[in-house]
Length: 469
Ligand code: GAP
Image (cartoon, rainbow, N blue to C red; front, side):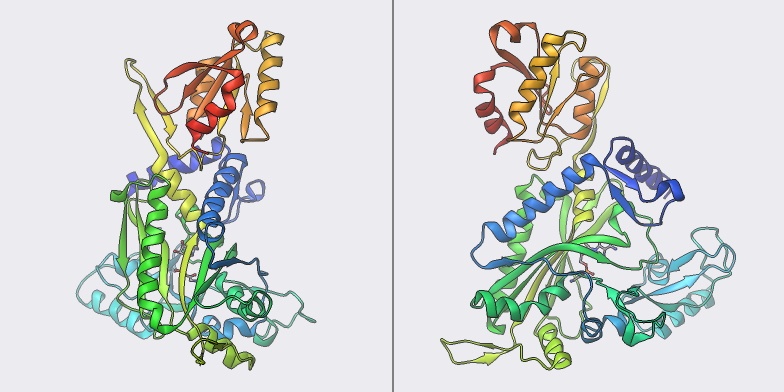
């Protein structure tokens, strides 16, 4: 456990020192489970988001985009069931006041109490105690714990509230998942764009959950981004489309270089009453110590649109002009956290390796070039030679409209290579004295560390070929 914590601490410290992820509000003492993304972090995150959007929207005929608001009518979350039952079982330590997820505590005894009523959770705890097991606070080891109670994950705001009265009817929640906005914009999408079934609506946006336990860096945060797609269909198509989307999502991971041995399917056996299938894609994380959920793929029946139809009084049924049938569409959902994908790709790319032929090692991010924050870095061989600096700056400026490029003249060339390897830059370009007369440069590849001379006139073609886009 301690080794695992040290390992995660190593990644957290790498992310902070290299400008990927910072603890939020640090100068005021920080905010638990909230993070800010620095320059390289936002570049990597945007690249993951863009790869998802390209796959899920741009390359498809049958998926439309949406960007709905974070604040939604309070009734939305009553209809979805979140106000009444989106909660986790919580135990408090009376000694150190740590908040503990009862279901996580029970997992250590091989018990799964996911979605169990709170009295079942408490009776399992009592059974364990009667059997002589010690149930202790993971923070301080004390056995002086409260019984489990339900803790709502919904985050409240006072937006639009006329008074300080935050009674239930006045509370506008921050959305706990982005798909709520998709359900509410189903009708406007139908009325404005007239898609025929089956079709999907995709969106990327922030979601908020008052997570009890949040000690896993950007894996579980209280403010996070989701990338969700809701596919509306006739119930008869569900089985076939569900399998189709499972394959699509699996192949997306492989298309970005993921090793098939590092991911697996987890089939949910306990389903919500309206759901017919639920699978997660899990990733085997070196920093979190084992397989962790990254993405969920859920067959949700017609629960969502039926509930919103019932609570709003608006007819959300679909009329099929071909068959004359009128029905509430069923929904197949793909849902993934952008922060989790960020952590997964970083975890997968992060490698300490020996340098062939040298008694030395390097830290390198073997990121797919499409995801790499910076695509190429341009260096002058020496920083105190103005003619090299000018030429390198000019070259970087010419490449910038095409790719995210970095100019670097700090330290010596070896240190610059190391720095770029550590942020995963696939190519580095050095301008030297021969470049002034011969008009060519040295290009080094991150993964092989091989170098070759390339003429400046052919450099953009060369980059396109090497980066693959
Ligand atoms: N609309 C369905 C839904 O929200 P979920 O399993 O609760 O389902 C989907 O969440 C995905 O959102 C998860 O697989 C995970 O990638 C991400 N996610 C959920 N809670 C998160 C959190 N607190 N921090 C980061 N990502 C989270």
